[in-house]
Image (cartoon, rainbow over all chains, first blue to last red; front, side, top):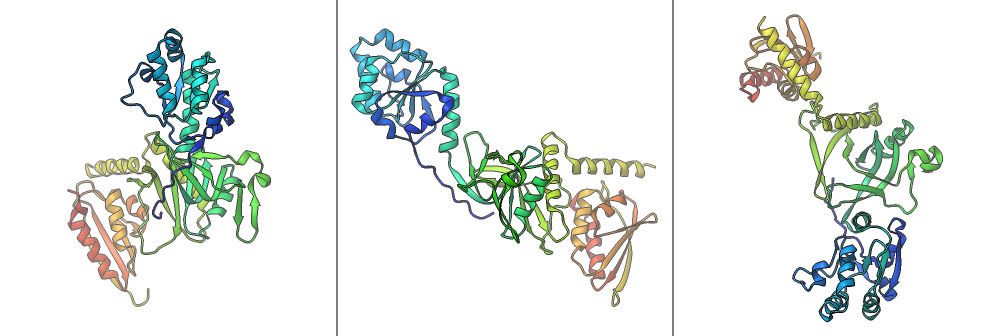
Length: 320
Length: 93
């Protein structure tokens, strides 16, 4: 695969948070701050900052006030020092502030929100659940990504990125796979996001999803032709299958004892290079690659086991 | 192959594990692009030396004898390549 160009995502405006229904966020104060940018997926609970410890203060993180922080404010909101610390937090300013668990948002907070133009949002969800959901969204939206040419399919629940030069038959291979009952994600430009969890997720780059071009037919809508059952929006990428013209001077994998990998966004994925030649049923070979990988993941090394059995058989023969 | 020279030679397998997966792959790779046909015979069983599964099926253990028969313009090269691999014990022992 060619040199990787890594894209950094655009920062998100705070108002995007309101679109994610599972967060159940409402704007409480500081509406002017809805256009502020969120650049990082990390979150901060500013308990230490509220007691005056700002040594590791990271203002570019969303600040989450949970039960502890609100209870502390409730007890000490009359103390000047605490209010100064709270003002330090708002004046920095952070992208936004969220109060979880449907906890009360004191006037001190709303006043600072208005004064510094920092939006304060409230969610009914408990802090742990809320931060987990918010993190999932932010990680998805704010992770670096690459764009690769290929087809992304879900084959036996394994995400397969099929790559190769133009007109090698990637789309035709995908079509055969979906006729066999596998699921189509995208054709041509695949957006691949990395994350902090060593997982790559691929989605189609096209604003009009689920279309592919079949030479001799033209553009087809896969979801319409084969139904919504055979498509999905995104899929974790587990293996890469590289199709290439059969090169008689090149040695292809013959044993499969040592697996090859390819690196995308710093993550090594199992990679199979499949030489294409008329009469080879590529979609069936892709299925075999997936099943081989599934077996390898469950500890089954077919080629290695074959070799061990063969050596054992030869030893027996020798000792005859 | 009409203009082919026919070469035959008998070898004894020297490496401890015999002609298992890795040596078989090296053998097949060494001759697969040569312009000749190569057969390997062991105890009356004959395999195409360009086929991994064929070579493995012979299960040629250490000390066993194989007869290599190469026919075609590159037949001498094929015999030499196989001889070298066997003498080197396929880089194993």
